[in-house]
Image (cartoon, rainbow, N blue to C red; front, side, top):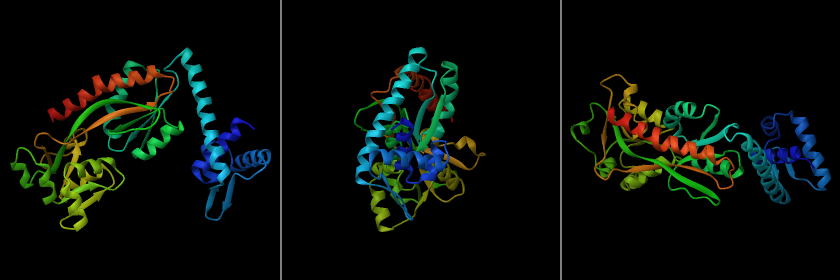
Length: 309
């Protein structure tokens, strides 16, 4: 039994496909299959059931894969700790961020990080909160940037910054005559929202509970988009209005005469952005640097850029 064989079975369990698991492990499929078979022979029972519909874990395999994952995480932690002894910023930091934060935070963060600590490189992953949560738990990511609330066993969370929501509309929209928009007004408009699975969609729904009733009744138009960028383009095309976090309004990306924004009435709906990492993660100097840069340089800059626009 080897660590390589344990990595093979964890990859197969995650991918549910021998070909994808082999690619993830940077080996050929026959090499991976032989390694899995060798481990199965040593254990004396089958770990995976192979069929035309895919690869399935046996009941025994579920428990063994969970144990293998813990072992591999400990091995990775050992390697990270060994590297930290020499240089805590030497190894890449694997960071995840939700789709509605990453594209707006990272362009401001990376130059600051390069100036503050040029040795530290980031490996970046963008996905939904649920996927990032699993990747953090499995040790596939070192830290994730998410919107609060967020709770997970054996995970530390540090709030980074708070940003308000704003209403994005065509410059010809009647609401441009108003100084601020009440959340309740959203239920009477043609609204563009993210699709299900995005936590930002849920936050907008929470800000205006009447939207859920409107969606259930089919009264009025609610169109769904796949990303904040798509929603902004749809607004620019005159299809309706949308709600965006302040960092994502992006009106400066368009020629004058297309888009404008209005704040919400006080207190405006907002979201708190946070960094989460496993308590046992050994390279806390890197985590602390990231928190400091975002809290004191990047977060204030995002707000200043928006206010100036």
